[in-house]
Length: 395
Image (tube, rainbow, N blue to C red; front, top):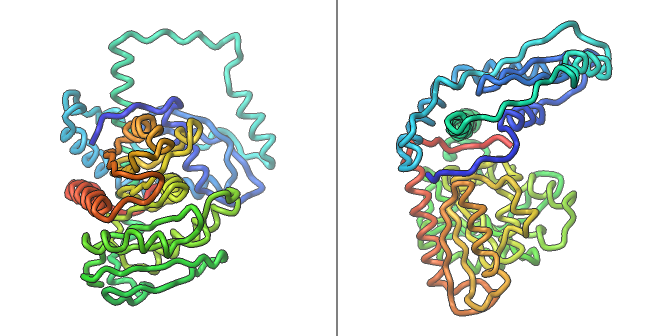
């Protein structure tokens, strides 16, 4: 694990926003609700009766897991050579709570007006005192620990929600060692993809999975370019058609959702070792799927890729991934972004390694792919040997 920089906005705001994004439904009753966050700070919000009920159900299920998450976060904190110099501030954290303030209202506007009345007027707002250096340092440590704690809690919840061993699921399709086949997603987008099963496939020990994308939507072609190297590592490869450069976001997202759902439901793979990859715009697709999709990604195999520029670098890419940037020494565009993209990914506590080879904007030779996949496999193995649990992460 690497030491990391904090997001600019308060984490508690993201926690509440994430929570609200997961609740659905509308109701005729609204209330002002006080949310007590993990760090014991408080936030007041207007929520519908349906939203409030959904939140309370989530918090009730989450409460018994808090202790496990704190212990897991503390263990990872102590194992880090930088963070272990400071004590993990476990006493600063608690369970989230939701408390209704005042009566319920028959419209969202009335509840919002009641919330506004509770806020202090400008004349009564005291200017914030500038924190001393020790106070600022204490806040920084607590924020770091809080993000780690929430990440561990997400892992535990994800493991319980998925609850799968792939071989035990009756939904998984039957695969044969060395087989190559085509499948179409069960969702509305009917997205075709291609599956290359490794020669050593054993349904009782599902293999790691590498999902690759092509800038032109040629999933089979991209799969074939990495298949031999992946087979040496015992990885399954899936090449996705349909997703390609130049698509509108409203067209991309349903396809991504269908693909991820189909893989998670029907393909027998090791969910602790899921990798994305691709060439050029396909690498961009791989990077961005890590913040759009819920399934936790172990690493990225990026040929001639980039995060997408300064604005895209701000996206919340998943943490703790292994990133193999594989670029030709004459690929000026990709190489120009290696340093800045690498810095961004390292702030997400990702391990980044650059693999260069003689050539331009093309997929690397097989020996370089062999090396990159072997490194990714080693990194994923090191992480899975820790206390972290595989599964789904929260959006």
